[in-house]
Length: 254
Ligand SMILES: O=C(O)CCC(=O)C(=O)O
Image 1 (cartoon, rainbow, N blue to C red):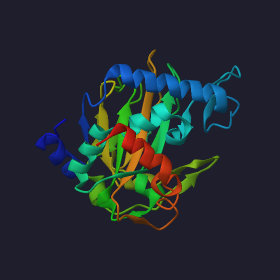
Image 2 (image 1 turned 90 degrees about the vertical axis):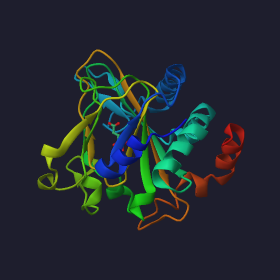
Image 3 (image 1 turned 30 degrees about the vertical axis):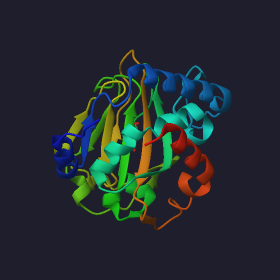
Image 4 (image 1 turned 135 degrees about the vertical axis):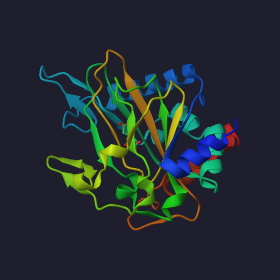
């Protein structure tokens, strides 16, 4: 699959771009179903607001699966797909290594917002131009069911200081006055398409107000020489699970 020059220009100018049709929608659906099964088996009990969202009637609905790469071979083969890796290399100019991943789920009429943040506010990786997120749409996603929103050009500024939100230690956020909502753009994308954003691009997603699911597979990549101020790279899959990583890349090729 070729990357259009337009995508390359958008990525470096705005800090994000959308490539439609990277994955077959049927394959995206299988991945979404696998993620839901994993959540049912392992995570349903957690109603602390992290992996699950507790509703007023006590029902817990899915919110997040951490480290899907480690959880299932179907997910490993999907995320290390050679087409995806090839597109990322064309965007950042170096061969990418997956260091972590998550699946974010917003069930119909639910799914809380993910507040504005820069991924590199968590990762603290350098050089930041070689760190990228590929967010794979596992559903058709638009403004109604909680698509990503970005602050155009925010990747050209510094890494902002992020602090934990009260009662949400897992949500790190920069000071609200540094988020210029006049430059906000929405990123609708079809099932199987991918939103690529730079590690410093400010982004958020709203609640799902529709009757449809909104599931997205967030995959985080860095060039081979990237280092981090914390343990992001040392804890990355390429270092902690080198055999699994190698076995999967050999199986999927590319
Ligand atoms: O899917 C979401 O709502 C949030 C995704 C995100 O923050 C990311 O991909 O970095």
